[in-house]
Image 1 (cartoon, rainbow, N blue to C red):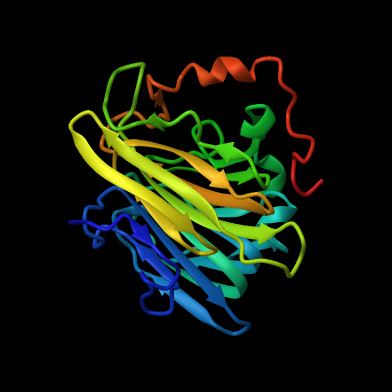
Image 2: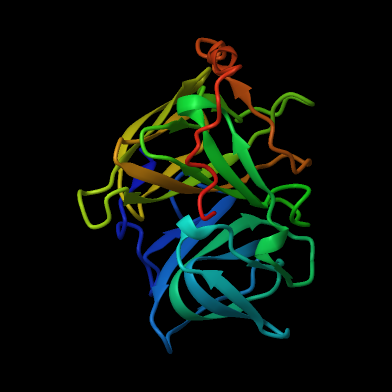
Length: 288
């Protein structure tokens, strides 16, 4: 049986603290690599049928695509201080990565050659979604309309302590024109205590079976953990009281259209109506 929950370090490989790709059991369309680099360290990724977005989580980096000029990423002190600039590297190009800090490389299967590009942090749309205890911040650095890509869809979600996001539970595991797109999804988590230096930050992630697709995940997650969603209803992502929650989402699928369309769980869709008239959480946005 495939594993859908990977604690930090359990998917480490060749200098990366996390490696999720097509070699991971049950996985096909997306990938994630995370590294924590010290000054002077470098990592390389070979060319292949994948497109990549390099996202600094903390620190600054330089991305050198095969046959191209280096892309300098100013990065950021942490995921809590606002969006980061990113580098896109298309299929058929390998890359060399250097710098200092924690960095994520988001991947998706792709075949269309595209030039390597730099996207500044100022170009990243920031959405404040939901209301009340379902308030969260979404940074759309790799979504359609923001990033010119073939298949990858990626964003960051920041949920204040005690709030729920990815709620009501939803799914995107069928191709229904104009209604739903089939996308497998990666959740990569970070979290922090609202009282610096105190506690042991944690959160929870739920994934449950959709019609004809059996899956059952209820994971207590910690900094650097990964949950995979091949199909099924997913959510809520629960930020425990006392601990702010960050997660990186990476999605792609077999459909011809690069689109992110979801369907709410029929038992819980009504909850959206209860948010009407509630105020947005005043702790948002982060980094302001």
